[in-house]
Length: 373
Ligand SMILES: CC(=O)N[C@@H](CCC[C@H](N)C(=O)O)C(=O)O
Image 1 (cartoon, rainbow, N blue to C red):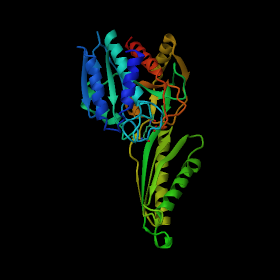
Image 2 (cartoon, protein in one colour):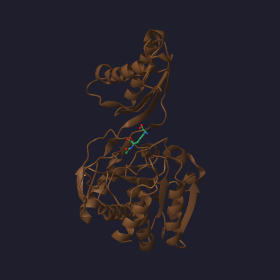
Image 3 (cartoon, protein in one colour):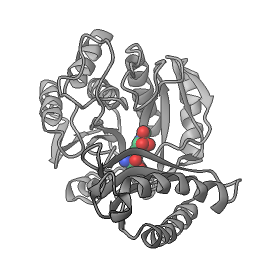
């Protein structure tokens, strides 16, 4: 596949972003592309909205896995692109359209090149939530083609095209989603003393939880809580009976995530007394940290140097990735791919440079070859 073909696929996918476990059109689109590569060494299985594609090797001794994610985000796109999302309120704002395109491009080259080992391409749903990696990993379909070594990539808007970046050991944080519901008592805006105002309770809760990080954790132990969404009430002149906060917790140390949750529970009890209300906390999906095995990162570094792709040593990031759940049980690594976008991940104007598609394909194909030697 040349750059133009890769661009076409990326643009098609960009127009049909779907949320976790709803990637029906995306799955159909990818299955058609795989069918068009028709070859007797290609075997396909589906799992929910995901896909596994095995390319049989010449003389296989192991299975090499490359995983990409498939879902978009509930973000209203505001790029000026001619091929914007046609799904209102949804956007590929985390580059999964790039990841899937690179997987298809690399698959085509590997089919043509005939690698010794078996290779499995894993198109995994629901990375942004509620988490597809763990249930896919546990599925019969995955276990039948379970890789002996696995890797994945993620686009990096802040890195130039032609570069990759990673590190051995910890790369991405431990995460927990956070959904908090408040139930008080509604009433007339003029009589707040007769009501239990959940806008005020939830607002103070947002402020207080930041102090869990600044006062409750060792300052040398990095962690973050972000409340990304807040809702309360129905109308400007009524006291809000309910409120809801939606957010995420990130820590570099898995134990700190537990400490934060314990402190949140205490805060909840205190707020229930102070504001005379009921609060429920749901921790949603939790992703294990992405931990890269040194041996594979060292080999990746050597491979990139040999093929002329610039390698930067990465720092740990507070991003989360359910690929961490796969790396917990299968050795391997993850790397960043430079795509040079002025707007970052999860931004409504994210616009990665498509020239990075070819770099991604080259990096994946050569990494597979190295892992097969
Ligand atoms: C790479 C990336 O941006 N991943 C997401 C993963 C989201 C996990 C979950 N929905 C949460 O918010 O905790 C990220 O936001 O880091």
